[in-house]
Length: 91
Ligand SMILES: [Zn+2]
Image 1 (tube, helix red, strand yellow):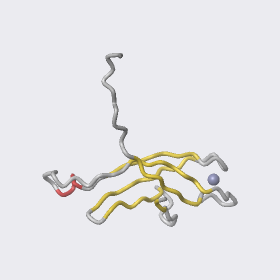
Image 2 (cartoon, protein in one colour):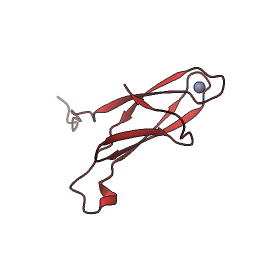
Image 3 (cartoon, protein in one colour):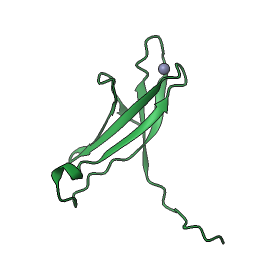
């Protein structure tokens, strides 16, 4: 037994997927995003909205994309930064 703190509980991730927005690139990008939590114990409403961010590189075109997750009362929505037209689905 070591003396490590033992991060036993990994933060629960969420698998999301989107079509690569690069022209002529047909990749479907899968990424495990961090779950964004809506913190109802926060004092200010602006602090309640959960936020998470993950970077992923497309294996097809090698471009890097940033996916943002926003938690709100009804759930979490994910979007690709700079590509508002891309639909991100939770798988
Ligand atoms: Zn691509």
